[in-house]
Length: 254
Image 1 (cartoon, rainbow, N blue to C red):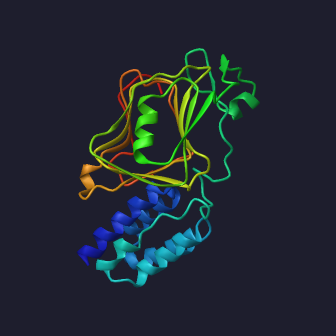
Image 2: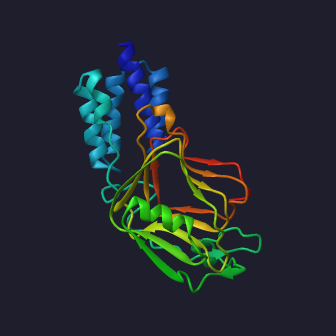
């Protein structure tokens, strides 16, 4: 029973990460106050999950009946195309880069409400840099120029060793992007303590799935780490998971 309780608490944490905050809080309160067993609460949770993600509901139902030793292997994220909850979506259009006078990114929803950006990157991208290998991604990032859109072709890219330094600055009128055309088509798998180490301003990361795959869970610290002058950063419409902290910021205003 102790193993099952630990497993269930781990699953509740996963619910929070996946965006099911309300469901997670409700399940935690039920667990602590109403005396239902973990499997009883999982059965209730499974019904709730079906409304936002049928596959997650199926996973939860499987957890109810599966032996504790097999349950962790059943916890999978739904595909972006199948997800119907809040957060990243395959239907979100690309962002038109715009920044305020202090370098703060300005969303299109803010512009629609009357906010006037100081700079709009109308000519972005100035250059599309298509990449289809891990080595090409590293080279494109290291040699990036203002206005570049480093566009990853569909596939899975695995990295190991040290983090990926992001050192070349963009500009408000010519930011630098690392992106996929559509969420769910590109997965970056990091077998290292940190992924992108952003040290320069005006970068955009968009439509990427970034996964930690370290053999020891504690080894994968951050998907993105912002340091120094890595301000005016846009992290938009991505899915980051299996890190101790998906994002860490030690730099300027982001």
